[in-house]
Image (cartoon, rainbow, N blue to C red; front, side, top):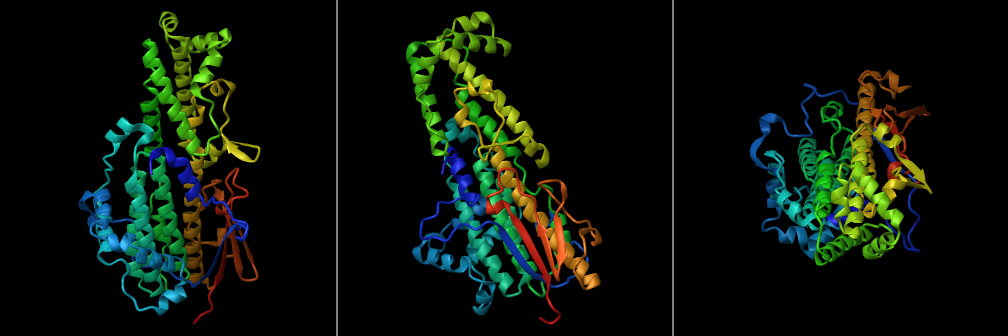
Length: 473
């Protein structure tokens, strides 16, 4: 895996796939049906923690600790037999897992992950490679840790099935800590993997709270950072990567041979965009030749670059193709910064900036930006931001279900409205407003808002259906 494949990675993590003719149609929504038992908060209320406590931390680098899980464990992680067993266990119903004799899945390999989760630092030590290799930086360790999360989820569900909740919460803590290491990685591809790991954890916890004697996690979930997963490092990495690639376009005149080599390298960079699902990009030399033939194109480039602070004398000294490349670089950087600054705002504010065009979510570019020769390598920042808010929403729904269990422990029934719940009801992070809630015939229906442009994507259409388990059942 390398950084240039990040767009395809997003499609994978978001659940996009192509269906064969013999496969059933894709679902239209994500329905989570839970039968809950009333349960009061633990005493003390923060007895359970879903990230390590400060008093538990030890000195060390969590990245190295998690990667050590793979040392001398090829059979467990990579053998044909191990893969077949994981395929069987991954989606096995809890009722089936409960029938099997309990033995902690993963043994020492996953115990090392528990140890790694308690290390106090996260340092990927990848910045020198990124500065050298740019979009060609390899990321083999990221995919490896996603495999580790898959194994941990199997152990987590196994512990849930056997009612070993204290142990299950240790595994959930390890998984969330593993996901958190990815928020410190300076690439969006790693942060997408971190979001996927977090999602795996939350869906397993949904199964856990539906068990008759499961502890209530409302305050443990409330004690997590908000947002749980931040994207700052990934966006900073995108800024650095594009500068690594485009800073080779300078305002110092190049000789013909050097300029030709630069154009070839930049054309290769644009070809990487095709791997990420971007439409075909015309050959860069052909685009430049077309613009050089039009005097107006050169005048527009000089006028714009003077606005950006370059002197007329310096611009006149540049070869015409280099002048156009420099214009493309500056226009790209302006639009990139405009997009990323909006993505760092609250989600409702960021979403308000997005447009839906031909059924697809798009950033509102300008004709001036479209002149940039490098528009095809613009990061899909808003897609990553939506992946983040999807996880925030799922976490808020889980916390709301636990708030309802608290209410039922006091009253013996589901709340008539969210206002009836004594503890603060989480709001929907997509809108910043209350979730849609209705109680009908003993069933509580909760629906999250759908992110703009994702109306037909089932992973963004989440609905909870909650019922109360009858006493003794």
